[in-house]
Length: 323
Ligand code: ADP
Ligand code: MG
Image (cartoon, rainbow, N blue to C red):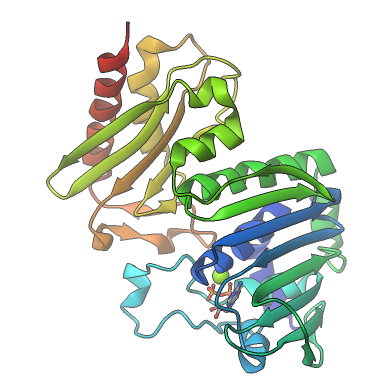
């Protein structure tokens, strides 16, 4: 198939964790309350994401794997104020161009669903099928037709680790959604979907961490910062256990991260990284999610200003609770 699809695919799909990211974002956009992620062989054999969201009818299912098919942009200005996670309409086209993908979807209140196979970008026949409401996407043999990408994959253990880390950000960011991660049949973790961030942290990081959370709360001039930090030192050799959200979207932003780590400095030994889960709310027009194709890096107006406020909010929380 289409070279354009394969080039686009390379931008969106770098490794199994990028597939998981796109599929889970789609499930969240479809207002799922339960999302089940199953991985086999670090995502080489299988990445399956099942949700109980709105689903698609047959026509939309076929459209969903075409490039630039998105149901999410109605007017152009939406691009800067996008409240949904996806908006480019490239992910499913890209993923199904570089794998053998089975899509199953049943629109809410429909009697049955549809099954569509896309094999390396070749779209098959739409087949009606009985199934639960919602959507199941099974991505098999990822990169079977892109040898360079396949060769660049790390061990199953490392790819699964990357998936776990990524999914953690979504589990915490969407505490009202019950998310399960399985390696084959084995459940690695699951969250309850009760909306309580500390409960998600308990499921993901254990009671020692969950029992020593400190709340962060700041609100002024249209800027809200809330969430939790944790001064525990256990296992702090990596940045796992750090999640930062802007307007609910998980982001990678080193300026903001540095500000938080700076606030922790007096409280942690050298070369230790703090735990934090912080939600920043700003006026949507200050955020440009288009800065990077995978969208985890965003452009932010007044970044230094927000970094300063973050620093003080975290510092205040740590100071208020230090012995
Ligand atoms: P985008 O998310 O940028 O719109 P995608 O390629 O990720 O593009 O998905 C294409 C379209 O397929 C979406 O706009 C949506 O209409 C539909 N879709 C994809 N996944 C799901 C899902 N899990 N539930 C319902 N609809 C979905
Ligand atoms: Mg999407």
